[in-house]
View 1 (spheres, rainbow, N blue to C red):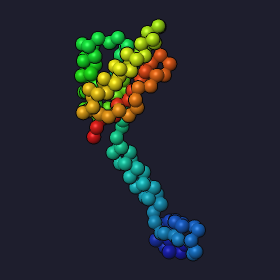
View 2 (cartoon, rainbow, N blue to C red; view 1 turned 90 degrees about the vertical axis):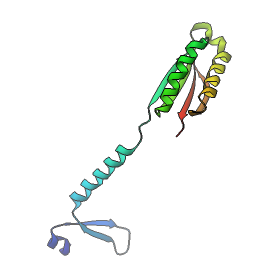
View 3 (cartoon, helix red, strand yellow; view 1 turned 180 degrees about the horizontal axis):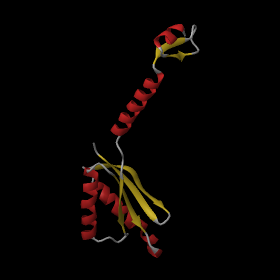
View 4 (spheres, rainbow, N blue to C red; view 1 turned 120 degrees about the vertical axis):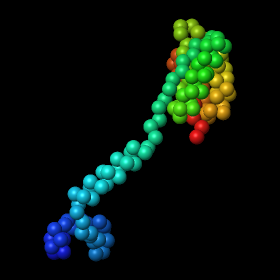
Length: 135
């Protein structure tokens, strides 16, 4: 305490359970400031994952499929995750197999750009599948 007072700094207890307790003489305000600065730099370097959605119908035509597939390729090349889903309206829920075939076909066509994170799964009136980009 005397040394800390002489240097006009703070005495910080580092390990209170040690015998004797470990303390350090430092400028605590400066320490907190640098810690916040380090945390901010780490946070800015963290990658932000964006999720892009592509919506199909159970009877999506080949031309529409190709158009949406090109968009999906672009999204995966940009590094975004892709959420592809087939939306069943009204009685079209009877075409569950067609929706699953469509999503599996999309996964196969996008195999070189990304890998399937979650296989097609029916949730209510929509069948969803997630594709993550390859590094």
